[in-house]
Image (cartoon, rainbow, N blue to C red):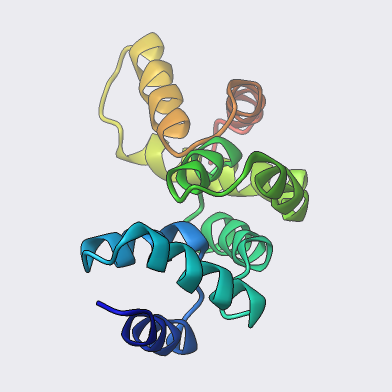
Length: 155
């Protein structure tokens, strides 16, 4: 595939939705585009603002925390998988609100607590911790959430 074809295909994709450079590199490699053309296409896309990793990361953090109800750790992991640089990740994480994260975690824990049939309180707590960890929340946040839930046992 030549530069013009690869560029036209990627701009058509970028016009429909937001992509990061890592996503575009993977797509171009899947299309078996040579490395030197990939480099040219990516730099041209960045130059013309079709892709902007900082903009993408900010939207990603907002969407994953709000709609998917992910914690900070899972968001970081997912962005690393997309080859987003650490400084961009750290900058985008400033979008997260600690209180909002804690509220989301409490909602998730309450929902999960109702679903768990286990009678043993230690196994029940372990199941909740595993669940919340899998959602990407920090252990300190999980502990705080579990303490709040224990205070409101009547929920």
